[in-house]
Image (cartoon, rainbow, N blue to C red; front, side, top):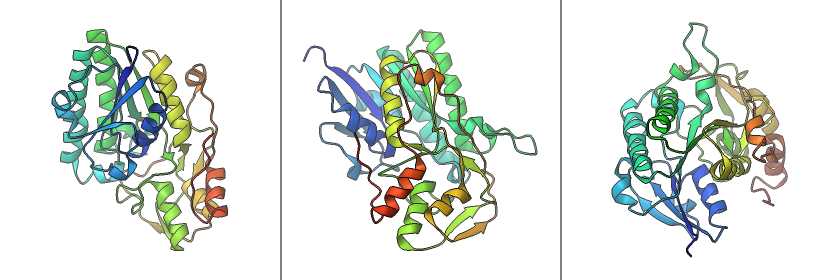
Length: 303
């Protein structure tokens, strides 16, 4: 097909990346390539119709020699608390890896959609430390957004930056809360299914704007197609505390000391995203109700 567009998704075997690829391959005019090092990605997330390459993003030139029209760069180390114990891994994946992606972007002159992190907007701590400086992960993501803005200016390249807000949904990774690579909602879900207590670091009053992966992917598609040189927050309207979420699941809660990365975050202004045609379709309250009503399956019908 002469009009076929080649779309590269880094981190395509991960949670959000696999859902994005699932949506992209539905359009027959797309050739979709995933590049993933499987640090947290899984072959179980592979989607029929996409091409999968295994390797580090710093080797992207060798691994993806095709001419690419759009890059969705989701393939970075993406956990806050663990980054405090392995900053060398964080540096390798998020700094060296992303630099490789940016040089590839410069060579191709294609559009880049970068998945930033809302952690950089977290309120400053009582000691004045800004949210972006609480952990190596938060710092690296904030630094990379500036790097991308500058690359776009220096080399006159098209790009958009999106910010994820605590994405949840099918295919999340479970894991020890705040201590592993698992995500909060999936960890709480597993506690519910296994009828075990959940552990919350701190008081549980810290808040999140939990945003469904389907809403997140819809935003990514719109930004990839229509987004300009701008930043787009992908955020649900509702803000819930971790204790409220635990209560929605009906979990017994155990409290542990706050970690250096324990933080609150709120929702964001999505007006510029809504101007592209985006609208929130899912809520965490409904998702949890679906899990409890369906015996814990938690897979929602996708219209």
